[in-house]
Image 1 (tube, rainbow, N blue to C red):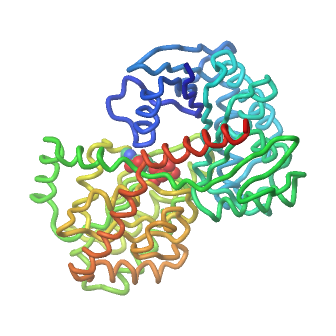
Image 2 (image 1 turned 135 degrees about the vertical axis):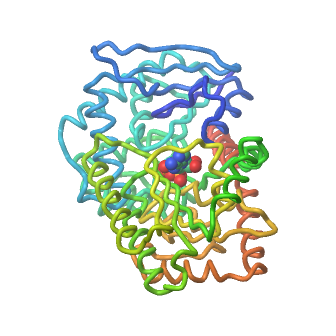
Length: 459
Ligand code: ADP
């Protein structure tokens, strides 16, 4: 019987009772079709012979591997997060082009593809995820895999001028033409991809989002990822949430603006602190009545750019509190750690404003989680960067240019003064889009397109 094989940098942890929305959706899809999930287990081994572990949970086979120290340094920290991540997020200045990075990227993906190859049977549908795994499809094809293989890019696809900064960019991007279906978050990402493919490869456009290359047809598509709204509503109803909600009511005074992000330079965190400073300069009467709760999860701390950002945020949050705060009030509460995932919906619901201002972002799920967590009878207001993929779907948020501290400050003022009726009507429209395009819809759309492509090729 054919099965779904998911290949991603990290797998969900079968022992974690509550994983993220994406993991939950993929897992439930895998369970339905009888599937397999292949990826890194998050561990780094001290020798050159990484352990591969195989286990079965709820009908899904998990094949995980450790990374060697060299793979971790050069593939994960190096090529994936010091070349691909910055370039794809418009930060070519932060990219480090060390030839060792590419060498280990190729080797690591080849090793992963070899272990996948042994486990893929005829008729299986293979779904590869995200920037860390771009060349996996090409490696599988080299081994003779004829199965239907799809790829989804969770991050933005930048304009060709940026891609061209990557040494050997043609090798990297042409490898995407080994897939049957390549999925993007937004139409803009697809347009950038098409521009690159038509200008820098020999592929031809033979139909709507369809290319022909080396005897094969490749389709591309736009599949904006969604969230699991059911998971949020369930979390809001738990006993733990009720207690946390009660604490918020008892202990918090004034209005809360919330930001929840990984500590990443793409998220625009320093710019957010500047816009809060600008807001208090504009609305001094709001001092003591409003504060920003910024939760920033530690991320990729071994990459120099992240270390520097962490220092910058320590400085900026300390400085704004020192400059504007007093004994009874701080303009910014900066929490530099992960919080319990189940606590986020209550935190969002107790915040009058959700401030989601990335400088560049594939989708941004926090924006959708914030909206889904609101009380429909008294909802908060989402302020959203026009450079987040989510802005294409959530036009009823207050859209801002995150580089413009004055504009963001004015949006904060508008959000805090917004009448209930307007808040409700914006929330209803945002919620409709989030419910219509949730993570289950996303999984279904992508896999149906991939399966259609399979039939279409045989015909
Ligand atoms: P990215 O994938 O770039 O980190 P997204 O906003 O798309 O950005 O997804 C981030 C996910 O991680 C969301 O589901 C969010 O709830 C979760 N998250 C972000 N920051 C934290 C944090 N400090 N603690 C716990 N979960 C977090």
